Image (cartoon, rainbow, N blue to C red):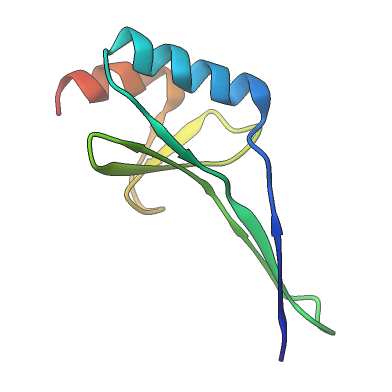
Length: 89
């Protein structure tokens, strides 16, 4: 089976919000685009979330979502709570 990978671009307003939160918190983020992975000749696909690395912690985000996942998809916080979370690290 062949896996087809298509890179996704950050939604511009999401990226701007994250940059603003990081700037206000005096941290530097590293952005890594997510992707869609499809198995050829099937209807199976996986959406890999975008990654934002801040203070050696990986945050996962999806376009058009107001949630931020910490390290994996089991712990999530609201995007509006990210600044407070960064202060407590």
